[in-house]
Image: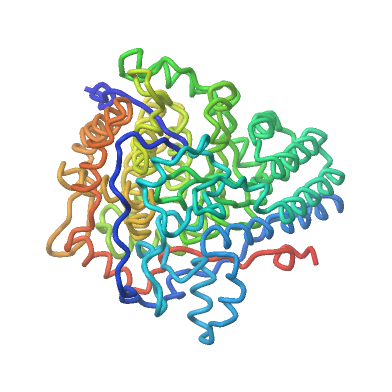
Length: 553
C-alpha cells in the first residue's frame, strides 16, 4: 500500500498569527535574579561570503542593488529595536570584550538564539517572550481583557498611555522617519529598474512601508516575473513574538535570480492543483484550491537583514504570508541556492561524516538537500487555511504552536510529494533513498537550532517519532544512524496523520501534548549532538556581505 493512503486530515497555517481563544494563564514568573549565563560561542557560526555573478547586469541594475542593500540596512536597525530596544547601539559600544560583542551582534542581543534564547551576559534574564512588542510588565490576562480593537494586528506595538492603559501604536507611526527613508530608497531603486513590473512593485512596497498596508504590494509581487533582481523587505514573519505570535518583525533579502536553476524548478509549481486534488483526505480538508500562479525559482541571496539574519539563517522562502493573496494567486517559493550550498558543505556533510552509517553515507547529496528544502516550501501551499468546522483559521486555533506544527507538516508533505513525483516519473532517475537519508541528516542539523526555533521544535518531534517507529535506527556500537527504508513510508504516513489531523481540527491541546512529549532532546540524542560540537562542526553560518563583497563600492 502506498503510504499516502494512510494520511488523514490536512490543514495548513502559513502565518503564526492568531487570536487567543484558550484563556491562557499569566506569563511565567520572571526570576528574581538573573539566570546563569551560557557560553559565549561565536565560533558556532561558519563564515561565508555572499557573492554572486553580476557580470550580466547593467550599471543601473548594479546601482539598484546598492540602493536595496541600503534600504535593507534600515530594516536591520528596526529589527534590532524590536528585538532588544532602541538603545542597542549604545549597549553594543559598552561591551569591551570583542568575542562577546561579536556574539551579541550575531544574536541581536544578549540571548543565544541557538540555545533557546538563554542569556550569555551577566545581568540579563530570559529573553522577553514578547520581545519589545509589548510592555515588559504586561500580563496575558491584562492584554486579553483590554478593549483594543485590532489587538492581533501584525503591524502595531502595544504600549501604555499616560494613564498606564494599554494602547496600540502602528509601526509606521513608531518608525515614521526610518520608514520614510527606506521608502525613498525603494523609489530611487525603481527609477533604475529595467523591468517596468519590478519598478511598479518597488513603488507599491515603498507605499506599504509607510502605511502598513502590504496586501496590494504582496499581490502585485506575485505577478512580477521578468526581473532578474528581487527584494523581500518589510515586517514579515512573527516568530520573534513568542508571547502570542501576532506581530511581525522587520527583515530583508536582496536576491539575484539563478536563471539555469530556475528553469529546472519552474515546472514543479504546476503540480500544486493536481497534488491538492489528490490529497487522500475528505473533501472538507481540501476544498480550498491553491493559486495557479505559484512561482518556484532559485536565487543567489546577496544580503540578509533583520529577522532573516538573526540566529539560524533561512535557506528558502515561501511568501507572501497573506492568506487572501495565497488563495487568489498562490505563493512564491524562493530557493536560496548559495546559502543552501554553504550549509550543505560547511554543516550537513560534516554532520553526516560523524552520525550517518557508513553504508548510507553515499545517499547524502546536495541535490536531495536542495529538493527536500524546495518541496518543504511547496508543501506549505497544500491543504486548507481554515479549520474544518469553519469557526476560525488553523493559525488562530493553534496559536503559539502554529509555526512549529506547520513546519513539521511541510517537511512531511514535502517527502510525500517527492515520493509521488518519483512514482510518476517526474524526478527522472533520482533515488528515493537519497532523499530519505539526506532528510535524516537534515534533522540533526536543524535540531541544533534549539527549542526556541519553530523549525527546531518540529524537527525534534519528527526525530523522536521516527525513532519510535523504527524508521531511524541507531547502532549502539558505532553511535551512527541509518534509515530503515521499509519502515520509512509508514512512519511518514503515521506522523502526517497526527499533524494534519491536529491542524485540520484546530486541536491546540493535542498539538501542545505532542510537542511536550515528542519535542524534547533525550539524553542519548544530546550526547550525539555533543559529538558534533566536539568535532567543531558549526551550527549555522554567518555572512560577510554588502557592497564591498559584491564589488559595488
